[in-house]
Image 1: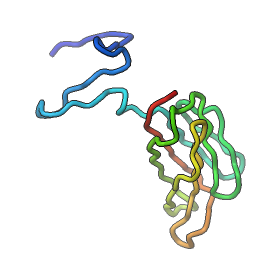
Image 2 (image 1 turned 30 degrees about the vertical axis):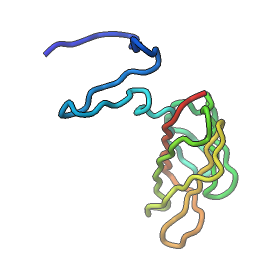
Image 3 (image 1 turned 90 degrees about the horizontal axis):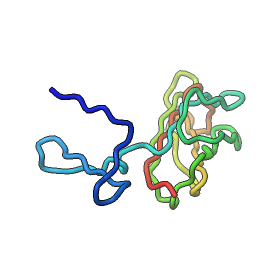
Image 4 (image 1 turned 90 degrees about the vertical axis):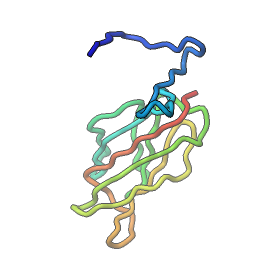
Length: 132
């Protein structure tokens, strides 16, 4: 097995586009499209506190179970994909996207047991798409 050590990868035909051949050599994946452009793990009980994050400038607490994740680098449009999960009071909740813009994602945290907005000790959000 060989090891390649590099600090920068650049596509030969398009600088920001690198294709990776998938398992079975039958498909390719665009490396940049497959990377999360933003993610955050935070506690929303009390003051919003990010445990760790990428491309997050700040978090806004709009109300119970309603948050904005404000990006450091904006998206090119508001059609990015958002994936999330959370846990509220030792029960699982679902986090849904709201009125997203190029500069922030709005999420709502809904507890399954009573279908009400709930703050959670663990909220995890990731987005995929094209940055501006």
